[in-house]
Image 1 (cartoon, rainbow, N blue to C red):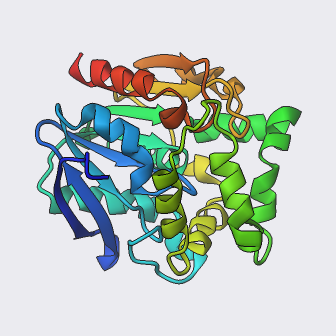
Image 2: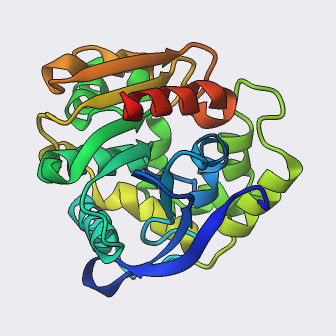
Length: 284
């Protein structure tokens, strides 16, 4: 962690006073990095190391996760509130316009943000996060994607978060550390840092509330006119590559990078490809 050129490690007020733990790194054109579940700010480690010399990176724990505030109740994790958090985060940091990068749930937030506030974005980068309208269709007509998404229905059950936490967090460890394509993608320090974040009181419950509160995210996401780069790990067993089909119907200015050797955790499997693709896209 000492390799990060951290400028600030602070709490920034999001929507309705929710405090978001935020790490700010480097100087230059601003890029906000939004993690997914069960990730947290540190999940961007490899991307941070690849971009910190060229950009200002704003890397929050989204609401409910790790060190950020954890409002009670699934209704406090609706996608519209998560979008407003990012708008407030940028405003509080006096950032008028920025590039938004999102992975997994961070990608879902980014799709919705790009729909509602395109005027605040220079560019949009989506990593292994399907456009919600396409994802809904795939859940309806693609048996392989339905099977791959079976874990979601488990999480939606009352107490579903316990399936991840029981047996010394076996579910979490398996889903993250056990599904990468690159050998030793996570170091011993990485794993310890993740386990510390997962151990924050109610952090996993809050992450599961993202699923409970957003069963119809596609209603918050429409056509995207912001220049958009989509990076997708083609060996993703959670979000299958078929979600790339028909994407140009919803995104006016689209580039797609296929990470052929990557799982869902493309930032860990092919970090150089991710960082170089983002850098080239943002600077173009």
